[in-house]
Image 1: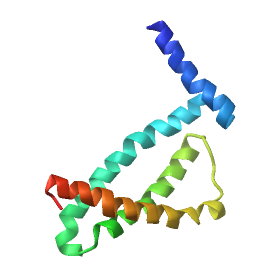
Image 2: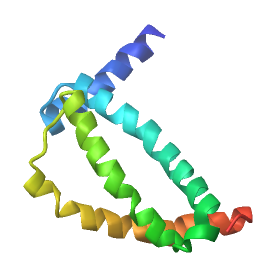
Image 3: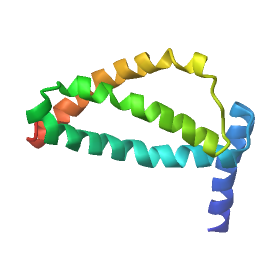
Length: 121
């Protein structure tokens, strides 16, 4: 067990030292939280769409494309809070429409398909 824990520590430290040139601890702190929050937000966002679809009449893809507008500032705030990275806004703002387009397609085709399979579409 000690060897496994030691190997796991090296797994987190060695790639980050050679690939990203930063210590593993901030990188691990920055990755664990979004990996837990983003899937939960997708689920909550889907439930919200199902609840409001009779009142709003917004297509699923368009509703999903709004999610990066909230995720992007939250991710930047988390990065600054954990002192992992800082982003210059003028470089980051052009990425938001690209993220919205990717989320639109993912929500329209993947989430829409899964909702149909579950019988909740």
